Length: 335
Image (cartoon, rainbow, N blue to C red; front, side):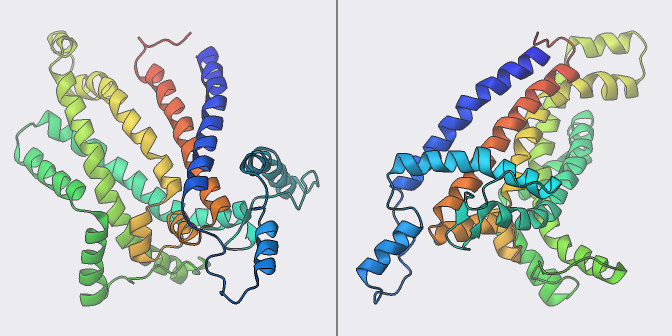
């Protein structure tokens, strides 16, 4: 497996370079001008100096190579400097956001905790809910529990999250006034009272995202379980006198998790990408909202950096899913 992992990591290098090039070319061809919001009274020579300050006077291939150097060399060195107090990185060579006039990675690190608190927790809760529901629904096929789970899953997956979020705001924030409708990103947890407020404002966005994630994963879990429950090895295990608990939880569940692991692993990068729509509904100042504001402001360095990070996470967790196949199924060997 070590050889396979090293080989996949080496293959990932040209893949990520190609993805970065595609992202850069798409943003280059996209309409819009980062200086479009400047007053018309700005003289042309001043506008040209502003474009030069943003690096827009350079050829595209120069700006692309500069971004590669900044992302893969300068930013990691700056991270090491901040962790160990060294001075290896060039302080002026970082990726600067045109919108915030600050290093893009610093803004991303500031927004990341908000996204992980809401979207990450919602994904974990969704997985923990989906797996037992899918297992029990498949084992008790066509029972009242299976029918109820199917109905809730279809509703949760079909209804868009912005509609579910607005409904929860109307019911629980406006009518009952149990939870705040706007997420306070400036709140810092320092005592029990602030922790309670943080938990209250997380309930609705986490519930919306957890319902959507659980609805999707539970259907995959149920379908995979039903497929394996009909296999010959299940009848053989029962004929040997194994208890139903051992047959279902040890043999059937382990084989059924193989396709579900792919769905779960490939869904993890969406945690870091943020739930763009849900963050807009509840005003969560996370990475999803950061991406939207960067697109509106034509902040190309921020958009390019965020898009590449999401793509890199997808490649990484795709590799992790492939490695987990060998753990779940002993028949799979990579070396």
